[in-house]
Length: 329
Image (cartoon, rainbow, N blue to C red; front, side, top):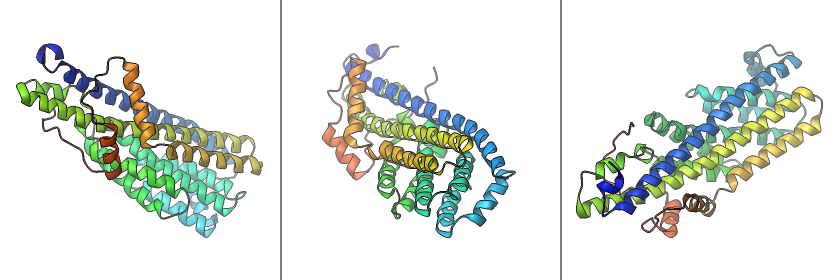
C-alpha cells in the first residue's frame, strides 16, 4: 500500500520521511563504495610494497616491523609505535594500512628529516581513525553494535592526537564528526521504511506528531551521514596518495626530493579534505541534494539555525518515539 493511501492528511510528511530515509541509504551506499574501493586499492599497493621491500633486502612484513623498531630515530619510533598500537588489537581491516605506512616510513626515514616523518605518521594515524568512522557507517544496519564500537574507538584515537601539534586542528574537527555520528547514526537512520510502517498504525494528530518527529530526527541523521560521506572521500584520496608514493618509491628509489614532495602533497590533501568540512558546506551539499530531487517538501524540516545549534552542542537530538521495523522488501 502506498504512502499516499495510508496518510491522505500527511501525504507530504510521509513522502519527506521516505525521501530522507532513502537519501541516508544512498549516502551510506556511497560511503561503503569509497571504503571498499580504498581497501581494494590497498591490496594493489601491497604488491608495490613487496617490490620495495625486496629492493631494500627486507624479506617479509615481519622483518619490516622488526627493522622499524631498531632503525627509526627515537621520536619518530615513538609516534609510529603509538599509531600501530591504536589499530593492531581490534581491527585487522587496518593492518594492511599500518604495513603500507611502515614500508614508506622505512624508506623515507633514511632520506627525510624527523619532522617530516612525524608529520607523515600523524597523517597516517589520522587517516586510519577516519577509516574507522567511515567503516562504521558502511556497516551500520548490518552490525550496529560493531559500528558504534568503531566510532568510540575512532573518537578515542582522535582525542589522543589532538594533544600534538601535527595535524591537531584537523584531528579536532574529525573528532567532532565522530562524536556527531555516534550520537545520531543508529539503526533507525538507515531502515528505509520502518518508520512509515510504525506510523501506519497511528491515526490523527499522533500520526502527524510522529511524522514531524521523524523528519526532525532524519534531517539530523542525514547531516551526520553526509559529514562521514565527505570523510570517506578524504580516506579514498589518502589511499590514492599512498599508492602514488609507493609507485614513486619503486620506480625512483633514490629520488629524495620527489619523495619529500609526495609526502607534503599527501599531508596537504588530507588537511584540505578534512579541514574544509564545515557546517555550512555540509548543509549546502544537502540543500543541493534536495534541489536536485525536484520535489522535496521541506516545510517542516528543522531550520538551519536549529541544526547548527545541535552541531555546536553535539547532543542527541532524538524526538521520534516510534519503534524500528526491519524493512525487507
